[in-house]
Length: 220
Image (cartoon, rainbow, N blue to C red; front, side):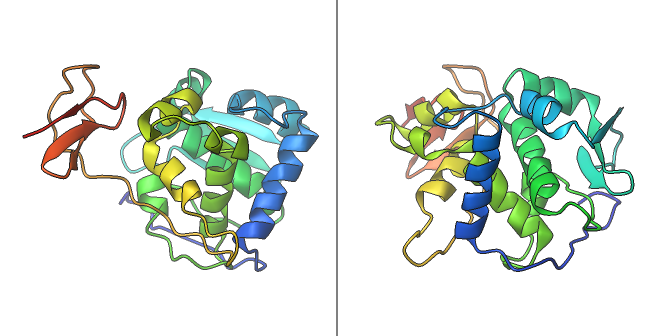
């Protein structure tokens, strides 16, 4: 947790289904319907920029990577996070997708800081929570239905659309019939290096390990 206290705001009730409809409407308005993935920087610059001020900063310890303020409507974003999102970094893309959620759903609402998916996933799963709503929006934006239809292993599917695998797992688990959305938490990594891709995203899988980045697995 950063030195900024985690803050949330009560907002108008929105169910997961209503948020998914908002995502659909936003994507259609951007002319991106049917796309498997999106350049989020382009969406912000081309669709949201009118009426939106973008301010860049160099993140320091204890500072959130991005947040939205009102009057004038401003997206404050760490320069590195912005650059990483341009090249498809999953964490950076999630941060921007979350902020897009605030910009689409909460214009005119005073909001707290957004501190990245780990902190955000600790927000209470309440349909009147601004942070919860922005999280759900980010998940549906990053994982469109067309991506779910691909018959690929989870790790390959995640790599195709530049998201972390647990983001896809969360959207796959959405109970549309009962309109229930439950977050799948990020796995705890073991700290070892993957021998296939060199990443340090090896998570426990049964008695073995699987790399969340490339899908390589090893039994122990």
